[in-house]
Image 1 (cartoon, rainbow, N blue to C red):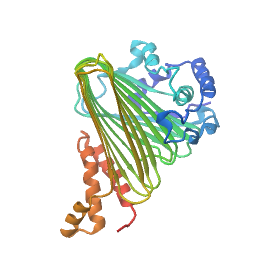
Image 2: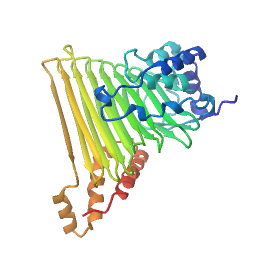
Image 3: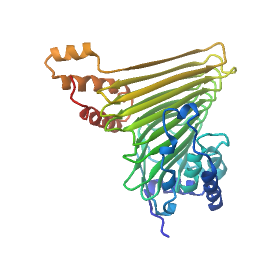
Image 4: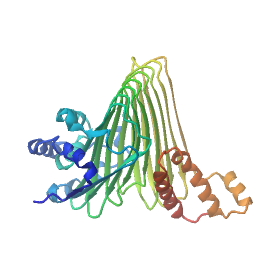
Length: 402
């Protein structure tokens, strides 16, 4: 059977590196584990507000994975791809190890199916001291039939810097999508990681983890319009002293779309700092769940961690839940969290209408400004415009009220 994958020549070596990570026997074993693994229980705190049985488990094996179309393309600007090499140059063991599935992971069923049915993972390494102020744009598209899968495995070597725009898109006919990203930022390196998923009507599960070593830095920007069923479980591990992480996320949802974000800021080393902000902008019956956790064990003294979730509900019928949590054992730390939720501020609305704007124009102005606090930080102008269009779609479909 012909492989229905198309690959941009510039990224071909990276994709081939990922294909060799797992043998057919590995995949067959993963499929057996996926079939036997339990569906996540709603007794798990993370699953109390979402139904794991609503994911279309019975459709994932409707067709052979080889029939699911996959397209991968990359656009490398600035210095080009000269500093990027396939991860398999170090041997496949590291690529395999970075995608290890823990036996006690209550979401393991998703990850086993991903491992069993995925093809052509994108796995690459950024060479030491590589620098580029321009973004590498990586677009992965999966179309039906079957399960659309997405995989990004990346190592940023010591002292290197990279801006990566990693966009995952589900095309027509896919039963569902599962994506998995694993990233290591080595000592003194910096990653600006921009993620976006476009799932359309397909149910979608995303797992993403970034590990920061000593004095490593991360800026992670994320946006989604949601999906008919959506879960994104995202973890940042600050494993090295002096590491710093900033996460800014945006969900602009409308037309009944859903997004369920679960974040974990895990401080396993002292003298590290993390800051996380998620904003949701909801109209037309959209629903959001945010569950955030900051963990600080005894050895992670001098931790500075912050987490906030802000929700703007543009019309009736929308709903948001936000549950921030702290697990702190260390005693010399500064950890705070905050949540805000509500409709458009009436005083702001009155002020703008007094300046000649209609009510709808005033709401659009307020909502756009709310989202702009995330968008303006994204260092790629093309991405900023894409995300402003997401916001315009959500705002444009709000009900006429008041």
